[in-house]
Image 1: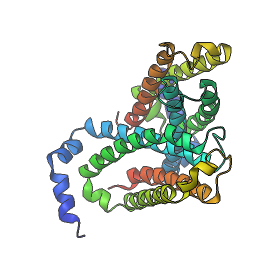
Image 2: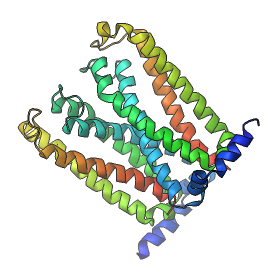
Image 3: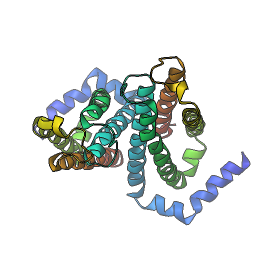
Length: 162
Length: 164
């Protein structure tokens, strides 16, 4: 990992990183936006997963619940990535070299792949997720999705302690 | 401050001492707190945006409330319990912190806003539940709620940067 060390050293010397380090209100403000975007994304994920498990909105077709909440996930994501990137630029070594950050990114890729898989599956064959059928297919999406996103939140908080 | 003896007693309890001194426990409790508050704010904002006539317009307010609010309350219970545990570990520090005090006041305001909404505005809910644009009182309640919860998250995050 010769390049990661050098990349972190270079990044923390950039003027952008220096500004973030020297301005006390930037990090808490960016973290606040990060948490608000996370709240938006997480609530949308929960609504879709709880609908998949037929806990909420059973009288509403799965496509309608998904049409309401899936776009929110893809809107919140860039906000999370930009605010996350600002935090990384402010403290590159503490984040990029942190095993919990690396785990968080791996879990994020898995969670996004699962969400995209669900979205594509939903658009291709609606019958597979038909609300009349209670089959295990829905739980195979919803339960790993819950687990992945909750693990992502926990990793995020633990970056500060590792 | 008149609360000082109580705060000192709280900090000295076995549970508070354990949370403060156990290096693993504090971040675990914090992680649950972040997850819980994210779900509280995220789920409430779904209702607020509906009341404002901005989203979920194909779902009546009454039905959406039944979809969302149980999730909000469960998450709030987790947030309140974990928040109390975090508070107990450094009670005097938090009690004297401007952003902690502000956060409590904002929480009381959010509770009042919600209580007033449920006591008065939803009396004739059946008449406007399915309307894309609820009455002005409901819109105001939704807007106030959204603003208060955004401020609660901001104040909460600032506590971590100002607590000594």
